[in-house]
Amino acid sequence: MKKYKGYLIDLDGTLYRGNEIIPEAVEFIASLDQMGLRYLFLTNNSSQTPAQVAKRLQKFGFPAREDQVYTSALATAAYLKDTLGSPSVFVIGEEGLKKAIIEANCLMTEQNPEAVVVGIDREFSYEKMKKACLFIRQGAQFIGTNPDKALPTEEGLLPGAGSLIQAIAMATGVNPKIIGKPESIIIHYALKALGTTSGETLIVGDNLETDILAGVKAKIDTLLVLSGVTTMDIANQSEIKPKYQVVTLREWKL
Ligand SMILES: [Mg+2]
Image (cartoon, rainbow, N blue to C red; front, side, top):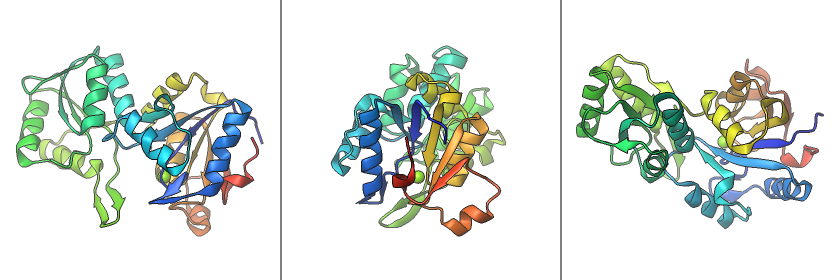
């Protein structure tokens, strides 16, 4: 196995499952710290700020700092700044997304925005959707934080950001630019934040269609861990192939 300097690590299914911690993941993170290796916790969820995600990880027993969390909201904000020079933006989303966009010096507006950004918004409404559609039809760039169709919760699978984004895509006939996994844009900006190159970095996750596909698209090496949504059978049958595969992170030698 190759030695990697940097790790991009998925959260749910990799570090914990629902409310249940994965002990091998705690050992894995402790080993990364002991070896002085760099890593980021990489999440498609745009609703929470890095500080809120770090706090949740700390409750599970991971010594996570705010600056070790990288969200699709941060990547979306970095993309806006890079490609459109901190444009005016109409945002459908929650605190994590709004804070990231403001910190990237973008102006949040409900009038003639240059871009429309859509993430998970549990106060999504016809009114918000109507505004987004009108702005996109007027030429605003349409950007989606992440394509997740559904969110696993104790109530069951609830509509995710992808389903809200698709409602607007359907209504306008315009395809959004998607930032989060499995797209490579989030990986590109996460590597920038981590300060390692694509060749030095490994992405670790439990989902072939998001984590592993993102790594494949971004041309970085991938490690699938079977502690979450992917069983051995699913992995064997899938056309998406990780570079490495382990049952638990205890098997991984740093
Ligand atoms: Mg996962």
